[in-house]
Image 1 (spheres, rainbow, N blue to C red):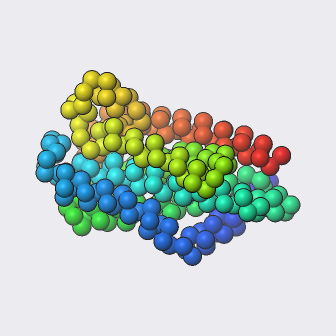
Image 2 (image 1 turned 180 degrees about the horizontal axis):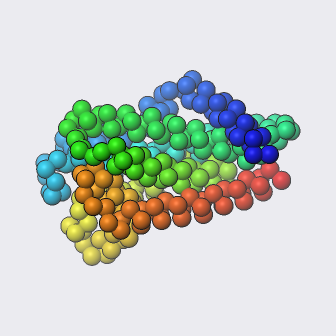
Length: 253
């Protein structure tokens, strides 16, 4: 059964990846907005923002990476919604394949697409001045956190794709997630914010994730932030996965 699941997931993931290669404009589109934010904040607002860091692009990059992921997963919800409406799920159910492999194919495709987008954003950041003395282990830790965060948000995207009534609704769920980095330590230190806003910013998941990635890039002790970040990511992932699978079973029953 396990071999059956992995084989079916691999085949369906290949199908989804082929769809992406035929519409590279989607990856380009979902990457353009984070790049626009990166360039806007560095070259327009950066001179007026006191982040306490010598390089604002280095301070800014962790938050931009999370925005990149949030932008990318909106397409996952949209693509899943189209598959549901096209009736292809019903055709898959008539075949001897593991039912959950259909969802996992979309999730793994999201991971690959977001990895490409993240690499593009990091490359542009390097071109405009981002530098890090972090070693291999620190970079692997950053990659691991970003992948878990991507998985967590992708399963939220799956819920939206299965529940939405329209294609626009399937992608619109990402807007509140895109807004979270702006009320966090992603762009400015939280100590500069007024009391209630600061309290929210310091206790929402993006701040702990951003702080952890920033500390890893700058070779600073990560402290408790890394455990808080992982707890948020894993907690969201588990809850979103349970809800997504519950909705999926109801839709195909």
